[in-house]
Every structure is written in structure tokens, then in C-alpha cells.
Amino acid sequence: MQRQFDRAVEDTGNVILLEHVNFTVPDQVVAHLFYVSGLGFTRDPYMDFGTLGIDNFWVNAGETQFHLPKGKPQVFRGTIDLMIPDLDDLRRRLDQVGRRLRETKFGFEVHDDHFAVTCPWGNRFRCIEPPADSRVGLGIRKLDMQVPPTAAAGIASFYHTVLGTPAHCENGTARIAMGTEQTIDFVETDGVIADYDGHHIAIYVADFSSPHRWLVSRGHITEESDQHQYRFQAIVDPESGATLTELEHEVRSLKHPMYARNLVNRNATQHFFAFHRGRETFVP
Ligand SMILES: [Fe+2]
Image (cartoon, rainbow, N blue to C red):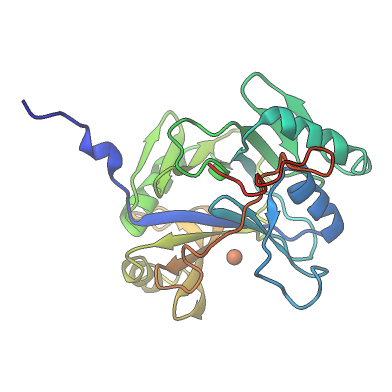
């Protein structure tokens, strides 16, 4: 008798990884307080922009990153789910940085299974313990983005048709697979959605040229960045061509020099008053 397995749950579509979210932030010290000291992520030690982090810095979160160049605050139109081990220790860190962030939009609420955390400029995060099936155990797990009524079906069709990744639509939500354990949910709302302010996400794709060919033929490429990267912004109905929502995507090939590079992650429960020699590195 052969053992039986559901082989389909192992499938991965063309999108391999949602690697980073890029927000411009007006104050790099405040951003450091929130993302590094508060959330417990790690400043990328290998990527320096020659200005001591005054103009830009990157923050590692598992296999994902936040890119935080200086500029007017940008806000994602929805919620970002973050896997953070040890929510009790997260609370200690948020209490600590909260004292320095009183004059900002920073805040957090403790729920049974997550912390709802707002960044100093209004970005909303859901911090969860890493699910048992997570190989990574840290970082960006899911984006929930608000879209207008009736947009979700066309958005699912766009990601399936153009980017070649599993996508389906149910009850006004388009769920898009991003690699092995990440998703983007585009959720229809009757409420007011803020204008798009230019924040972006970066994804790695195995088939790099087919989406490019489709997007070029319809005039949707916004930047031919270099050999390994292009950008698009409009998410359109593949049938009608109508723009359904906007979110700039940096699309990278698997030959991009930064693909799967080593991202240093520290164990954020370590600190000056509770230091355990040898436990400095994050282990999933
Ligand atoms: Fe980027």
C-alpha cells in the first residue's frame, strides 16, 4: 500500500517571494525606533547608502524587508501581517518605544491571537505568532489591501493570467499566492479608500519575460529599471483592460543579484538587561 499525500499543496506559482515593502518615512530615527527597537527587526548591515542611514535604511524581517527612504510618509491602504515570535516580548518592546513615540500615530492593541500595531505614520500591522507551517517564522506573511466594490474578481484574474500565480476570488476577496507561504488579499470595501501615494512592493518571479511581454503590449510598464528588474503599477482587468487598483510592483528575476541573499536576523528577545551568550541570532 503506497502512502498517500496531497501533492497539490506543495505547488508554488510563478511568484516566488514578496520580498520587500517600500515606504518613504520623514524621520529615520523614528522609523528605527519603530521597526528595529519596537518590532524587533534587524537593520540590514550590508546595505549602506553612504549617509549613515540619514536618507535611507533597510530593515530585515526573516526573508523579507522594509525599505525606508526619507520622504513624506506613505501609508499602505490596508493591513500588513507580520510573523513575530514571542508576543510577550513584543509587548515589552512596544511599551518601551511607545514612550518615545507619544507625539506620533503610534499605538497598539492586544488581542487574543494578535497585536494590532500602528506605525508612527499610520501604517497598520497585525503581529502574529508564526503559524506552525511557517518555514521562515519571521517577517511579512500577508498583505490585506482595500479595493473598490466589484474589483476583486478582475484582480484575481490579473494575477493568474499575467503573473502566473495561483489566485482565486471568494466573497469579495481576491487571494493571491506569493511564493510558498505569503499571500496578498485584495478586499472589496464600500468605504473610502485613500488615494495611492506611491509606496511599492517587490516580488521575485521565475518566468520574468512573459508578464513583461503582456504588460509592454498594453503600455503598463512604468520603469525598465535594469536587466533584472522592471516595474508596473496598474492592476487591470485582463479582459476589459480597466484599471482596478494601483500598487507599484518591482518585478525581479531570479537572476537578480539580490535574490535569496543572506539577510541577517537577530533574536530580538536579547537585550542589554537579558543577555544570553550564544543566542544572538534568530532561529526559526
Ligand atoms: Fe524596492
